[in-house]
Amino acid sequence: MGTAKRERQKANRQARLEELAREAKKQKTRKRGTRIAIVVIGGLLLLFLLARVVGGDDEETPAVTTTVAPATTAASDTTDAAGATGTTAATDTTAAAETTAAPTTTVEFAYGELECPEADGSSELPDSFESAPAKCIEDGVTYQAIVTTNQGSFTIDLDTEGAPGTVNNFVVLARYGYYDGRTGCHRVIRDFVVQCGRPGEDETAPGYNIPDELPAPGEYQEGVVAMANTGQPNTGGGQWFIVTGPDGVSSLTPDYSILGTVSEGYDTTVQALENLADPTTNGVPPLVPIEIVSVEIVES
Image 1 (cartoon, rainbow, N blue to C red):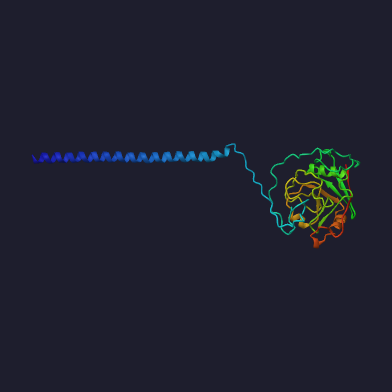
Image 2 (cartoon, rainbow, N blue to C red; image 1 turned 180 degrees about the vertical axis):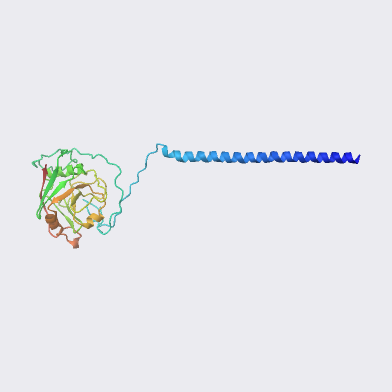
């Protein structure tokens, strides 16, 4: 009797142990499946996020262009480096421009409606200009300007390829006789610039502005002739300046449209004009008056 009871108890314990073993195995299997599911789902989620990040490069998103403003140093309120009015560039010519970004887009030059003068200079100078000039220069033609002053003459090779609108404006004014006997070079700073083209004290002449055709950084060299402005974009008109030395080359920011380059008379006449710089007046006026007798346009 006792033996049979012990056998039953032993059989029950064995059955219970086997049941516990089966349950433990099931739990282990479920845990393993859960971990696998978590890993798979996590991997899929990571792949999804990576696809979103990488795929963003293929979307048609407009590009953003950042323009870097030129760094300038302090300037005098009456001696702007190339301005018709106001302050436009540093008179502390020891600091080089820090601008490195050239314009990223080119806008077609917008001509005005002023009637073209006769090429022989016989057209009468208007009392006032109601508009900037229409396009008057011809494509494929080379233009030079022979500038005669009371200190001698020099020749400018006009840059019709780099700044056709700026050249057109200068040619039209010259053919109307705008510069002849009524303008001069009112500002001279040694190793910097000789600035010309202002009639008397009239800073607003000729009464209109033209769009910029700006160069890339580094294009200002000795002998380069560029248009003056008021310090704001698209405010060129009648004034222009000659870069005469290392201070101009190093400190002028590319904010002035290049009109051309002095090809004759730089070492004689332009240097003679530069020698009239008055350091006590910061260049305005020069030691003696510099008058422009005539500006003759020559085609070839």
